[in-house]
Amino acid sequence: MLSRNFILIIFANFSAATVVTQVCLFVFPTNLLLRDLCDRMYRVLDYILGYFLFLWLFLFSFLKVFDWVQTTLLYNIKFQQKLEQARILGNNNYISTYIDRSLERNNNNLRTEIRREFKTKPTSSMV
Image (cartoon, rainbow, N blue to C red; front, side):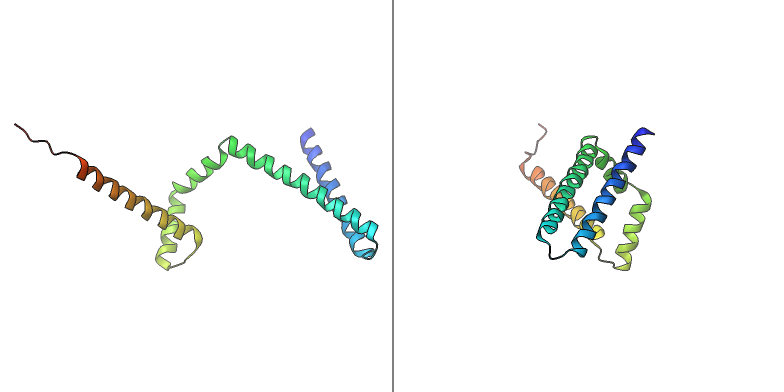
C-alpha cells in the first residue's frame, strides 16, 4: 500500500511539473529566463524518466522476463496460427517475414552443416 501511494505521489508531482513547464512555455514565450527554466525542467524530466525506464528494462532482462515472454510467444499455438494466417493472406508484416527469414536461414545452415559432416566423415569399411 505504501509503495502504491508513493508511486501515485511521484506521478502527481511529474504531472504538476509538466503542467507548470507547459504553462511557462506558452504564456511567456519571449522571456529567456523562463525559457531556460523550462529547458532545465525538461532535461531533468528526461533524465529521471530515462533512468526509470532503464532500471525496469535492466531488471526485467536480469530476471529473464523477456526470455520467458519471447519463448512463450514463439511456442504459442495461437501465435503460430496467426502467423500462418498472415502468410496465407500475404500480409507482409515485420514479424512474419522476420520469422520466415530466420527459419529459412536456420534450415540452410543445418543443410550445409549436414553436407559438410558427410563430406568430411571417412567411410568405414567392414573387413
